[in-house]
Length: 281
Image (cartoon, rainbow, N blue to C red; front, side, top):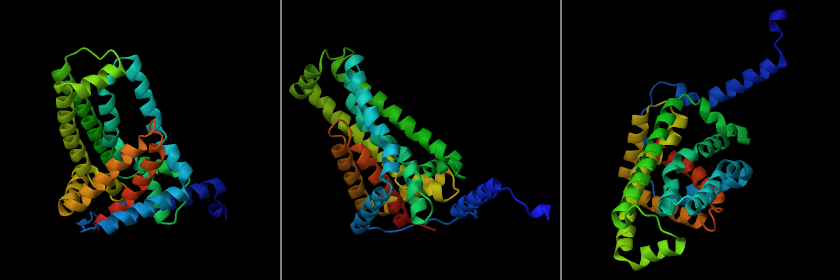
């Protein structure tokens, strides 16, 4: 008789663990064969619609997760005027996109849970920490941080190559140097070329990598290669998706990055649904 008596708190914990294990059942199964599908612009539109629907269903959760973007943007703006980092302010802001796939992890998890009809309170965004692929997620995240750092070093080197080590005395002088001198235009062109290459690299290896790692227990190499295959199989459609994201981030940065608290969650949720269309097992 006593063996059948289970404390209520233990029962709740067991039920929660069971639900989590069932929701992650695919990750504990045998190695899966991942298929990369063809997608069209209609799939992009549908993914965006589902992203908006997810955001509408849980806006407080999404804003809670992404409020860091406008806060960080404002902090960097303050640093630019107080500590002579104005030359790399734009590269830092542009570099947010390089870390976007990592920052959106919690959003992918919430979309995954909502898709399965599970509870989507904001605490569940941190269930990613219990993912069987958390090691691979951390490694891939560190790769993105390394790329972001390399981009900042490159941007600084481009500035020094054109203007030397002296920082501009004011914002107006900096703008004047950029738009009214050959060195300024050379920096703009060169910086955008390198920025595009860094963004292309991150986009190619991460467009579906993090959602894949949430759903399946695979390694970093498998996730990155699958993402590369997805881009290679759908080059035009993925290019359009990249342009949509880039345009959305630019609009969301105005004014003072506040719009990113809405744009980032929508793109984060939409990316999960795009992943579901591109990759199947």
